Length: 169
Image 1: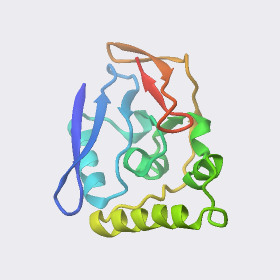
Image 2 (image 1 turned 90 degrees about the horizontal axis):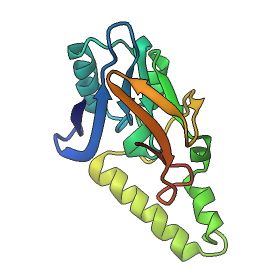
Image 3 (image 1 turned 90 degrees about the vertical axis):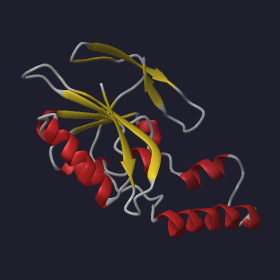
């Protein structure tokens, strides 16, 4: 298992760990999460994939959840031929999450504005974006068994942080 710490374009090491499990010869490999939508992060991941001799066509990307720091490069990887797996419940976006707990632009403008201010501060400070571009993915749910290299995983439900967050056990 290879662990990659991504670096932003400002050279700061982030808290995002991406794990890659190379498949056996002729088999598919697994990347867990896709990291930030950032040119330096992409270049770093391209280098790792080249070093491990993994082509995008032989790469499966398991997204734990659809936040910008875990799925930012998913659209790039999908466009290059990787297969993306994600729980479809992750399609519920922040505005839907906020609405589900009673926070709306009309009904609670002060709270809504606070979320917008925080989003803008983070974007301006770190150069990150909270927006995740759409990408094609294959739906996956709890209880699916996956095999990569010498590892066997079962997808497990980790609801709480997001509606459809999944993990691997």
